[in-house]
Image 1 (tube, rainbow, N blue to C red):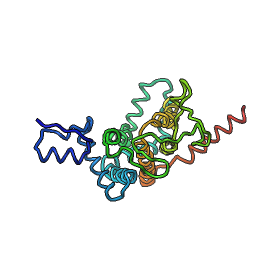
Image 2 (image 1 turned 90 degrees about the vertical axis):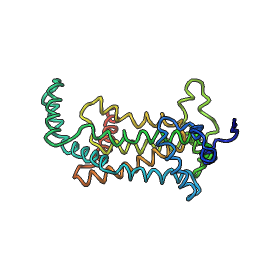
Image 3 (image 1 turned 180 degrees about the vertical axis):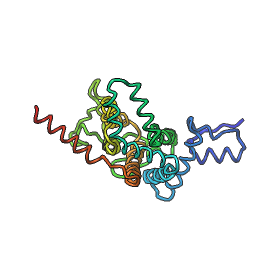
Image 4 (image 1 turned 90 degrees about the horizontal axis):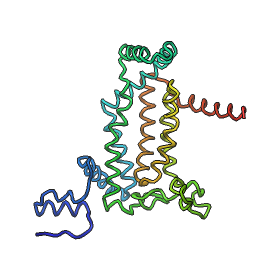
Length: 285
C-alpha cells in the first residue's frame, strides 16, 4: 500500500505514475471533462513558461498558437460565410420588409437567398463554439494546477489564478475604500482593469458586423459585451487576459478575412451611429 502526501505538482505526479506503473495516478489532479485538452494545454503553457519565465506571457503565446490552429479550413470558411452574409445584408432587410409579420415566408425567402449565395447561416457561430472547450480547459488549468497559483504577470497582476485586484468603483485604488463590502450590492461592484479591456475588445468585435435588422437580436448583441464584462470580472485574471487577447486577435483575423472577401467593415459606421444616436437623444432631452 502506498501513500502520497504532498503538493499535486504535475511533473511530480507524472513521475510517480510512470516510475511505479500506477493506474491513472495522474488523475489525482482533477483535469475536468476536457482532460484531453486541459493537460496538453497546461504542458504547452508550462513549456513557454520555461522559455519566458512568466506564465502570463506563456498564456499570450499559446493564445496566438491556438488562433493559428483555428485559422484552418473550418473557421476560415466560417468567416468567409459571415462576409457573404454582410454582402447580402440589404437583400435580407428587403425580404423582412416585404413580408412584414409573416415569419414563415420570411424564413423561406431567406433560406432561398442562403442557398442561392451558398451561405451557411450557422457558420458564424463555429469560431466561437470551437473555442469553448479551450476556454473551459484554461479555466481548469488556472483553477487546479498549483504551478499557476500566485504566478505573477506584469504590473499589479501578482496572481493569475485570482481575479484582477483593481476596481473601477474606487477609481482603481485612488479612493481608499472597498466597494465590495457594501451590503447586497457589493458583490456586483468588482470590476477590474482587465475585465474592462476584455469588454471593450468584445464590443469592437461585435461592432465589426452590421447591426442585425431584428431589434431584439440587436439589443442582445448591444448588451452582450457589458454582461460578459461583469460576468467575467470575478474570474481568474489569467482567463480574462486570455479572453481579451483572443478577442483582439479575432478582430484582426475577422477584419483581414472580411477585407479579403470584399465585405465592408462596419466598425466606424456602427460607432458613428452609436455616437450620433446618443447626441440625438441628448438634444431631445
